[in-house]
Length: 245
Image 1 (tube, helix red, strand yellow):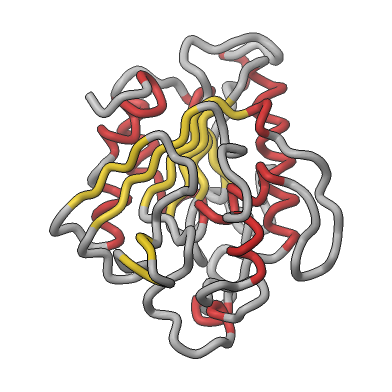
Image 2 (cartoon, helix red, strand yellow):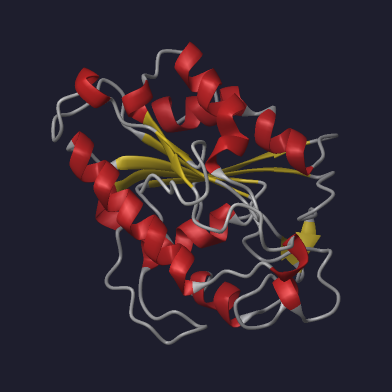
């Protein structure tokens, strides 16, 4: 889970001797799931915000499910291997803290995390991931999530392919959007009407919505990166209290 093959900043979380394994933490643990070609360290700013507002190191977690940016963003796809890593990570954190977890998925990290929770058959390899992990997730928050693809996907190749890519109606996206309310007990989305990477609308819908979500929180005037980083207070409120303020 440490992903030392990528580097020292490819994961975070855990308490060492400050937390006794398999005992509950004061706050329900939060897992941050990065987006396309990122690493866990890309969200150090959000992690620090949580730390500055009462969350301890053993309550905020992240790992890198991809190759840390070695693959060009134009060719990065949602591979079965990524879901396997995240599923194991969710199970390990839930076991370590003897608790359900909260998950915040950013950009491509949202559909990847949703498939990890959903389980079932991978569209790219035909492998069986196993049953849903819904019983381990309390709150799921999608932030600038590519849940219905990206408005930048015009040609169906690379990261926009129609199998396990972000192309409109890809097999992967159709799979995760074919069911509702498996992501957790509470489901929220945060997105911007000015998103410059995922976009506001794609495939005839608001691209960052999660089918069956409890509530959506549209932002205005923020680009893709800003909505991920500048809504940390809203993210914290949703996973901690289940409300925006």
